[in-house]
Amino acid sequence: MHRLFAAVRPPASQRTQLLAIMGGVTGARWQDDDQLHLTLRFIGEVDRHRANDIADALRAIRFAPFDANLSGIGTFDRKGVIDTLWAGVQPRDQLASLHRKIDRACVNAGLAAEERAYLPHITLARFGRSGGAVDNFLVSHSGLTSAPFGIDHFALFESHLGHARATYHLVERYLAQH
Image (cartoon, rainbow, N blue to C red; front, side):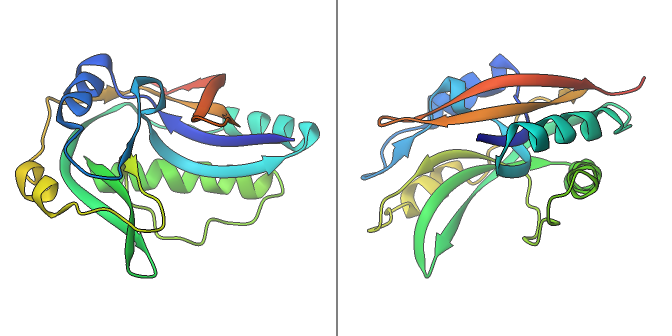
């Protein structure tokens, strides 16, 4: 089985900026440089044949390159307990459009449509069942922004879950049309 997702890796300068603000939150499991990405569609576990179908379907996606930037900090919770700390990414409309195209390609390859609302973000930290006290971090970094960076491709990645952390391997890159 292959655990797949479609994503964009931000450039080194934005990843360095994110790594520099990480810390100071008890219980946080911070992402490392190799894990920082903007998920466009989590695909999940699929067999080899479905993985090939998905890769083929993603090749048909057409999109124009655009600029994005980091924008703010937020959290996700599960049943009222914060489990994820993230950095937002703008422009939401263009990223959501690319997300919808990828989702349609996945549906055409036989997957169920994504049901969750799409919020462009880069996960910074995850928390265990007790959650995390993130208020000071949120206040300190609420104004997070970055220089614009180009979105001129997205990629299909395979995730391997390990004891210490997940590792991601590039499967294929899909270029924008200029």
